[in-house]
Structures are given as C-alpha cells and as structure tokens.
Length: 187
Image (cartoon, rainbow, N blue to C red; front, side, top):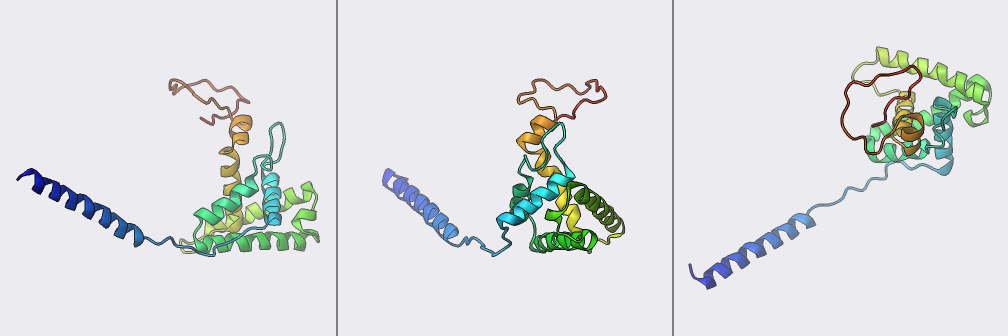
C-alpha cells in the first residue's frame, strides 16, 4: 500500500466514523413527558410533613434540609408514572384524611395534631405493606416517609449535624467502640 492509498483509507474510515456518529446522534430523540409538576404550596406542604416526621430538636429538622424540595425532584425525575400518580394523589388523601380526623387541613393543625395523625397514618401504611401483594401499588405515606429519611440524611444538614461526618476519613477502621448516645456515622 502506498502513501496515497493509506491516506484515502484513513479519510474514508474517519469520514465514515463521523458520518456514522452524526446519523446515530440525529436518530436519538429525547423523550419529553408532561409528568408531574409541584407548586410552591406543595413544597411547603411536603416540608411540613417531613418536619413532622423529623422535627428540629437538638439538631435541625427536615425543613432545614429542604426535604420538601428534594421530594419533588425525586418524584419528578426518578419515579415511574404510576408512582408519581400515587404520590400526587397521596398528598390529597393525606390532607383529606387529616380534615376528616381533625376538622382542619394538615397545614392548619398544631404540631401535636400533625404528629398524632401521622403516627396513625404510619401504622396504616405498615399494615398495608405487611398484607400487600406484589402487584399492589405502594402506599403513598411510605413513599413520603422514605423520601424524608433519604433526603434528610443525605443532605449537608443531616450528614453533618445529625450524623458524625468526616470529609476525608483516612484509613478504614472496622471496629470502633460505640458509646451510648454517640451519633451514627455519615461516612
């Protein structure tokens, strides 16, 4: 093979690669779905639910970690359409059940009323999960509670204030003495 033939072969090869990539990329369409959307009052509502689950005590609560905002992102970006629907309808169900029990919306209830209501709702969700068949949908409150815990303990506030956190932990120590009252490790 002479130099001219080699250059032609390389040009053909590179040209085909570039044209092939262009054809491949132009065939890829991004799927856009309407999905779900949350209003500012929905985020406030979810913040209050999360704050009732993880209230501020000696450490900041779920509202300080902006867990309501985290929940909306996770539901929009990570949940399947059926679970998005369950979650959105669950927000309405939670408020309606609270109105039936306390004669006022969840947002208008006192912290003690909210706590008592969510304790009952959590018991209902646990009973549902215990008897749930594989094809049954998830319980909306379980979704909210899981997102609350995940959002809080993976946030900066949760990891640094509620858990022990060392940015660069150094060597691995598999056996560390635990004293009663010590925080769990975030890292």
